[in-house]
Length: 263
Image (cartoon, rainbow, N blue to C red; front, side):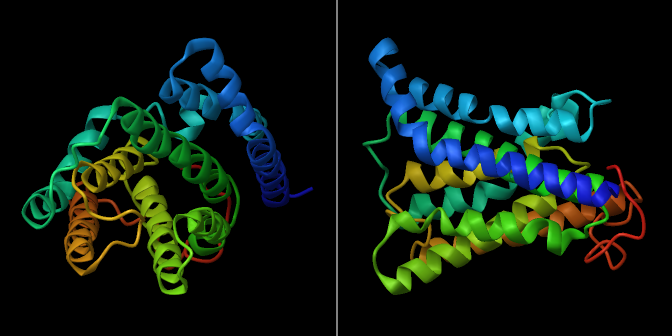
């Protein structure tokens, strides 16, 4: 069996197991934990962690010489990811502060569920594992490696609305958001903290102010979000130039890499 086929098989199999377990038992597990500890935010975090066990097992099987922490990119600079994310999301915080009212209903559970858990586990499972293992350990280029995860990421956010126009908008925002998060992940040296914090602070700006009940938003919110996206891309390119490194996603890695490339 070729290395690419082996990595692809393990990645899809163990992500599929995770997704099935999550779909069937996440809410029951969270409810049971909440009955024991009486804190829904922490229960949500713990349930999300436990449901990810197939992800961690699959990660170790793909590259047993590395630790799970190293293979997912958790060993890279925490502070670099946080500082970068703060800088690029400033337009959203500043713009939203002028355009929308402060959200007085934000709570510790909102922070634990919608911010910390969403950013940490979605990036670990979707970008670090489903995308990252395919792109780092097989010959698959960026587009084939990222497409399925981005498609699924867009689909799982469709619960946020029942209106066709909003559903299309939500899908497109989350689909292309998944591609952006995957791109910054590899361009910043497979530092998973970069997309984690970018995801977290983008969500935080959305929650801190009464922007929208879903990921699509309105004209004003999307203007400020587009500024953040443009700043993210620009500063990432400047970062690579300053380090005198070529972009990890380029003409030789966009579709099919000539040989396995461990990043």
